[in-house]
Length: 465
Ligand SMILES: Cc1cc2nc3c(=O)[nH]c(=O)nc-3n(C[C@H](O)[C@H](O)[C@H](O)COP(=O)(O)OP(=O)(O)OC[C@H]3O[C@@H](n4cnc5c(N)ncnc54)[C@H](O)[C@@H]3O)c2cc1C
Image 1 (cartoon, rainbow, N blue to C red):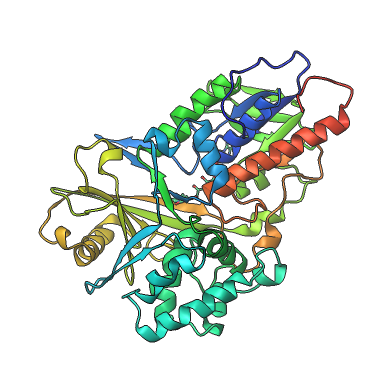
Image 2: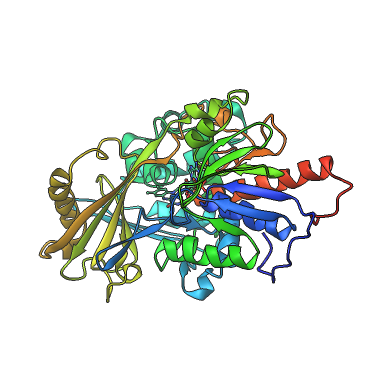
């Protein structure tokens, strides 16, 4: 994606695109096509952009639907942040200078995963050797598994057919090492238990993030509500690029000849026939929208839930921006005080519970005592503090099920119908279902739309190369 440039109006004979879905994939596809001179419309069913990475107001708080982090290796998402004027230099997002993750266990033990500036993977050697949450015997075996992951090819279908947990056990990793180290990263990034997780996706995460580049896993997060970036800023960038955004507009069907039926804000139905339709919606929505003659085996990708538990205390309970919990359902605890609009720091925390099948349907009356107790075990300052507000956000379809064997179900951007394209974090980007994958998928789909259009309309001049 190019840096923001003043919008040049699309030429009168410019090709037209309808991007269905205003999540990060749709926003990215729309920006790229607009930069290439297309006349672009985004149709988003909800009143806001940002899809699964967004915010809403709850009383005096602005709450993210779920805590989101990115890594320095997420170059496409970071490019989008820059494009939206929300890179770390703006203060809207934070990116660590150096990976530094504090970890705590309920029995009061702690560790720190902090890298040095040495070349990868040596940059983590000291942190792993001193990783106090594992016995020395387990720590000594970590390097062997890390090297085995480094030799793994994430693009090989045989790798995807294997589970990550089984692979780790073959590399001599104990249950404790899996639970207290490997799973802390893999469950958070893949949203599935290591035993079920695709080895290919786990290898992608560990190789690209931790084992190949010194700074790859430096952690980033939003310092403002996600909606400020993915909705407010995205709308501004889209408008500046000349993209028309139609929110509260649901696409009802897409035909193989690119005829699209949609229902707008005023409930009126409309039919469009753009030169390209990019379906940047979740996989089940794409399967439902496509006509019967375009097969959608990706409907079988399934879903994994994420639960976020929100606790507002009467005093600060967290000293830093976040802490990871081990041996606890409170997997990652983030300070959201400032971003939510509250004064001070450390008083309002959002707890991420990934792979949350066990918790996702539990009523608040059961979750509240459980998580209050967990946080008191993990955070000494929470022990005497009063919880003033407790609520949860449930995302039952947070990601697709990133299980062994899922890679063969992830399609590329093109379908059997020219001009009908797929985008979304679930498509075949090689990345897990993340913001990075979403942005990459949108860029890929826009590229293929452009290629297809040029092939079919080489004589027209409307779109820029
Ligand atoms: C709780 C939670 C925590 C997460 N944590 C992280 C994290 O820490 N890091 C990370 O990188 N990723 C994380 N993710 C994943 C990340 O949010 C997604 O991978 C990414 O946002 C997906 O973007 P997308 O554009 O592909 O799809 P979506 O965000 O799902 O966007 C699709 C859009 O299409 C719209 N739509 C659907 N059907 C129609 C229709 N018929 N007509 C018009 N519009 C339609 C939807 O309303 C939606 O806005 C998390 C997700 C959740 C839910």
